[in-house]
Image (tube, rainbow, N blue to C red; front, side, top):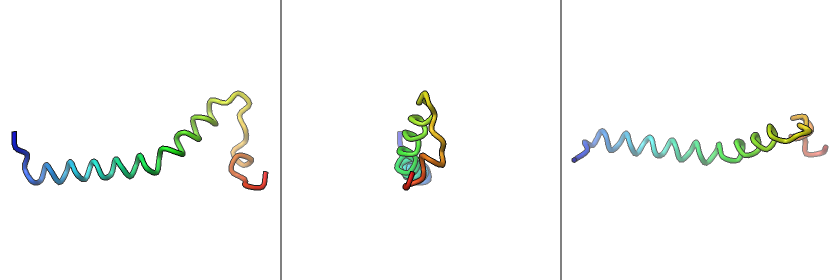
Length: 52
């Protein structure tokens, strides 16, 4: 089965966008899951403050 050039470009674009989304979304997702699953949930201000 041959893919048309338009289909190849579309697949490439989807892969590129997915790669960018995973690259920038992975660490915030892990931090959010850790924050939301902890028993004494820390305040976000204290969590994000570098001096706290």
